[in-house]
Length: 124
Picture 1 (cartoon, helix red, strand yellow):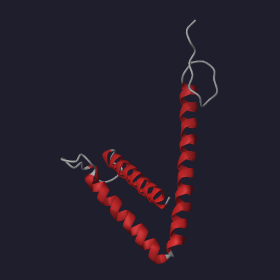
Picture 2 (cartoon, one colour):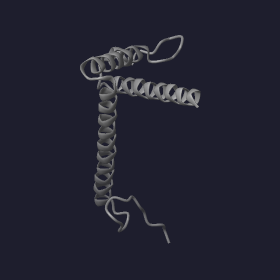
Picture 3 (cartoon, rainbow, N blue to C red):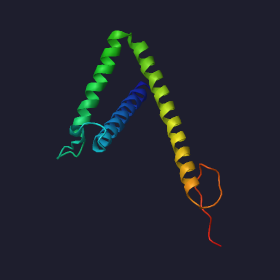
Picture 4 (cartoon, helix red, strand yellow):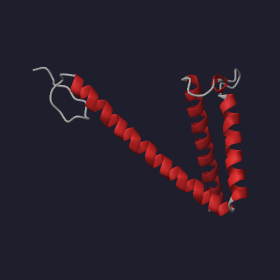
């Protein structure tokens, strides 16, 4: 049972680091982050600089919060902040989608439907 728990923790940590490095790479490619973070390693085809950035960020947050607070308090604080951030991101994304489709439905003459759903009439 302990081996399964340890394996799950490692898998989730690896997946979270993979997503964050790819997200930061995409932001650098779009020009939101500095250009050196869009570097791709020629042999491994991975975003090498964002992997280093993720490592430094994780170490600073983990060691810094662990020294400032106790380890369990730091764990619960990071968990709480993550839940709040995810809730805000998903909520704002839903608001953005509703605003986008309400504006596009108001501009189009595709037929009558509720403001935030995209729909079109079928030809008769």
